[in-house]
Length: 376
Ligand SMILES: [Zn+2]
Picture 1 (cartoon, rainbow, N blue to C red):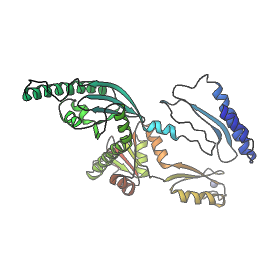
Picture 2: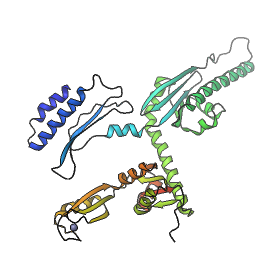
Picture 3: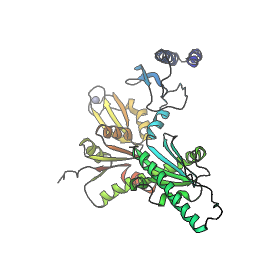
Picture 4: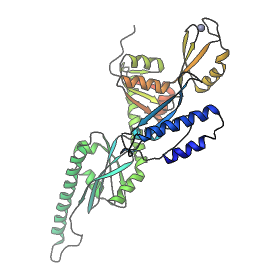
């Protein structure tokens, strides 16, 4: 509230009358909304407020959105800008999956989860195995045998806890194993974790420690690990699509028009969209006769069209009364897909497969639930 009061003072100096009024109104509305909260909600709060054009310039209406994020929001951000800064909220959505962390060495083990860039420790265990020096009088062989049995018991115990803990996490996307020395490999390669959990291992990393410091080391490496995981998922998805295309199974659709038809017919199971897809769906509409025309254009073509639109004539009634509506194709297709319960995957252009999707298929590909009805 203190900062908003300051901002209110500063905003009074804005030269443009309209902008000044809009900014002052927005700050006032935001303060009114904040007053409704006796204390900050547990996950924090995001308030978006501004004058939003409803239908071209001059039609702005004040809109306010107050959101309690589904998970703690960890940034403080105040921006007065010509757009809403929603990136921190998108970040929460992006990292909604859980990864498991299991750190182990000869003495200690730790099980933790990693979600939205934050780790929480679930369980700590110690081996209870005494040092490597045998007691006097004990034969070296007997000592080794006993020790091996103890290590085996310890690994079993850790594996049992891991199986139990991670089985309860329904959205477990991968497991990262770490620790100093060879214990982590012995543990990973032995029969201590069940098959389902072993399949989830996405990385085995060296850390100097088990425990909090070890978790910090994993967190440092996590972005790279998660990127690697995502890349292999993306490769698999595109390869699945390429398989359907290559084997002519009838379960593939690509390009804007085919994909849109399949989406609207509810045929799509997975929709692959290249993150580099920058095509814009433009709808040119005549205000007088209602004539409309759909076009797919690149951003620079849209900019040119918008410059020229006032002087262009309607093809039907010849009036210069055309207006332009723009829809980002990626968002539009994703939205149609969302409404139909489609699994929507935005594929980076960082892998060979991602490049193939972009260049070979226009950045739009769909894997279908059922084969399309034959058109012949
Ligand atoms: Zn017209």
